Image 1 (tube, protein in one colour):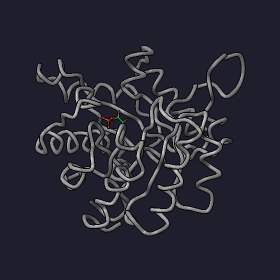
Image 2 (cartoon, rainbow, N blue to C red; image 1 turned 90 degrees about the horizontal axis):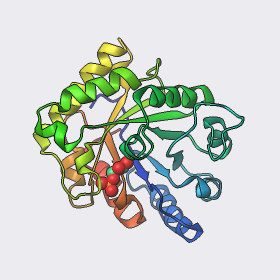
Image 3 (cartoon, rainbow, N blue to C red; image 1 turned 90 degrees about the vertical axis):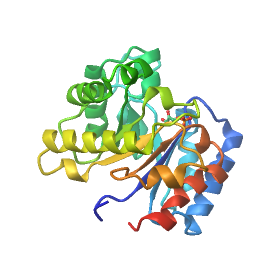
Image 4 (cartoon, protein in one colour; image 1 turned 120 degrees about the horizontal axis):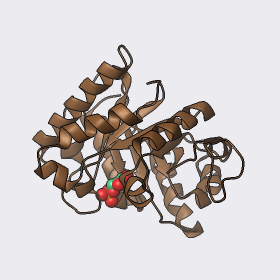
Length: 255
Ligand code: 13P
């Protein structure tokens, strides 16, 4: 990995977490301050209800916070939605857009995902844009085509402050991961697409792997060529597990 791409390990808490779970974020903060995973940037994306309190917990530490979605609009009559500007105001540095659970459960189109990514950049947030094929698409040999289509239709105009997460839908929450060869092939492909979309800038975009990353497989997954970090779901809910994953970078790769 070129020196300029600092590894990023992000925890996506999804719809999990109560106030008591801020203790896990405090434990992540302590571990990071103690120098575990010093080579990697660490981001926690709690539910929006915990964002401001998590910000207080992480103050004065390198742990950054992210949100899991944003509305394309800035303010106004959008009952129940939260804008990127509000997330920034609440202490977020990152926002995930286009997660497959939102694409599937909220019928989010690539165009909407692109609008959300643009809104995040407008607000001064870094974007973690998720792409990935379904099991049926993988079996049909259409994984690369699917990811290329998602990138083509949902990438924002600017590569600065952009992170892409490759999350095969069939690997999310299943305990199943692609082979190292398949991950390497997809990440190499995504890199090529990014360089085509952003001449000069695509090389700098970090491409994360997500889907059943666990303490037991993190070292192997994070060592794969062109994998610049991980987007972790279930295993990010416990600081002890999350920090083992992030800690893979203390032995694997220098910043
Ligand atoms: P799991 O790590 O639970 O498979 O979830 C991955 C994910 O969807 C992260 O965004």
